[in-house]
Image 1 (cartoon, rainbow, N blue to C red):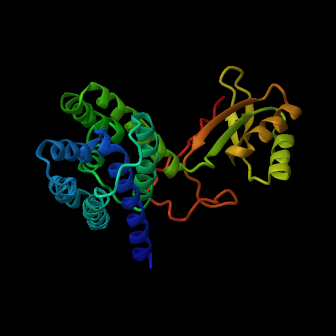
Image 2 (image 1 turned 180 degrees about the vertical axis):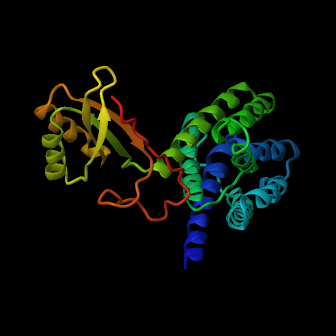
Image 3 (image 1 turned 90 degrees about the horizontal axis):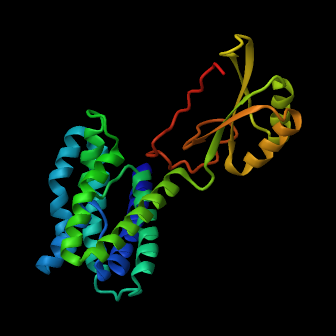
Length: 293
């Protein structure tokens, strides 16, 4: 059942990516990053089908990913890349939606970003540079995003030479929109917040959060770095929409309370966990608060 569900969502993500590419970006000579971007440039120069290059250019990276990331990742990525190769060929015969370059960047970027986010959430990949980045980020000090950006600098530079520098700049806008949209899909619009409150009125604030917001609270033993006095630190996780109400509760009880707020990309367990259960591929961000104030 999990395999069928994964295939359905991977297919949906691939179709969205194909629409964004063939209905918005490719007809206006705007490229995506990574191997897809290289494929777009090569297809333009050779006048050969884009889908063929997407598939064959990714094959060496898929083999590399299989050796380092396992069979599950290989299945999802091979299915996604193979289906994308077919989907872009089908959508290539449809007329482009708009000739406005900025609209193409915005809407094409959003559609592709949603599609890629769905694919990432189901442990798939459409691009060999992502596979390389995920593998080497474990061995070197650079993050996945930094490695991918390194590749894309050269790809976008090549796009400037082939399509003109205005198209390269539009491609950069599209890439940024894709990147931010992927983040939104992976993290969700209801991004959670972890809260640390340092106050002498920890009991009153804890009770207010538990009664008004119905959120669990953890009291952490701390110590003032300057005074050396013991302190109780209030720690809780709330939704973004509850943040304003929480600040109001704290300020009413202790206007001088120290509040630190951190984004949390995923929460497991407790009343807060209302996220889609398919969110398995999201990179977890664990928050480890200091116990000293």
